[in-house]
Image 1: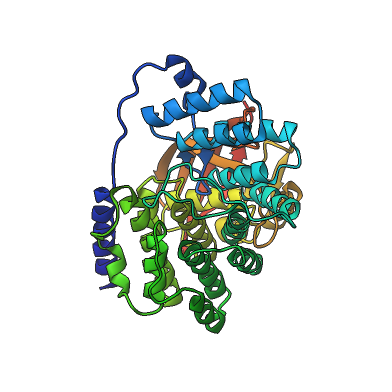
Image 2: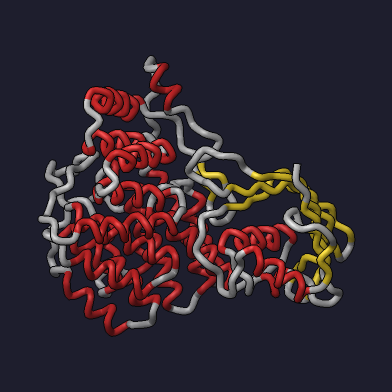
Length: 456
């Protein structure tokens, strides 16, 4: 019954998201600017080892980006560096945005505004460590400064900016900690954020994430108390998806209605609000103990490829975490996917469930000469590489391409190419080479018996 419900949920979510799908007009002219903003091979690599690629350029955003470049050329001010980065990000070119903010920081190193925006875009490309560093520094530099209304890049339907710089610093810092699984730090950041919330929209968004962080820490009483900050009849302009989640937490909306299409969503809000509501439902399933249902909702969110939305980033982080806490390598592909997550989270604990214990595994590293034989030496090798029990936050990304699986009875032989990017979001070389795996069946699925890495 649960599996059938899960399939129904996925189909409803897909239909709801389809209502919000749109395509931008074809780009004509602006060849020079298009070349400057030409898509890279990828903007980021997900925690699951998937390339995240931006869609084709939208002409309106491209025109605004061209205008921002012209303004910066005439006046290299802090404000113009900020707008160049923001316009690049709205065009889906997050690496270009980060470069603009970094160039601005080279000229204005004490700019908490530039740090706030760069930290935001580090979140987008899954560089959570760098996001925390930027946003913590921004918070320190902004202390004692008066409230500053932050102009919207895309005006809301009221035509009035609803957030301020201090609020956005703490809001994105809270998100960074949440995505790293550092929930006590996320709680503090969102409580600091609420001190700068000056309208219902701001209160709703910060309260929603605070509630999620408290529930992750199993502080259910404190979570319910946090909801009191949101007025019963809040006037919400742009954070309707978050408000709808809060209504569900309060019992005013049935959970399964969170996947329905909402007629009062503005056209440009249909898809983001559908994802926001779906992520709330996935959390609801987690709190109810239905991990597989939650995983199904999160994976359905990821299938929409709306990878720059916070709901998608959070769903991706949760899918990775659930793979770590519930490893079930039923197929060779499942084992390889979990191995990729192990690398991208640097989780030493998972190694024990991935590699064969008896017979003992063997391993040729691309970093060390000689054959590593046995589980204990293999664990120590990964520890020397930086792995830690339970994982640790870092920005390196590894993934596999050209994967070919050859079944061999109760075993399987795999050939692939590995890629390792130490500078995702920046220009720089990507290490790569061939790899072979031998996997054997065990009662809980496939385990790695042998791996051989080489460099090109």
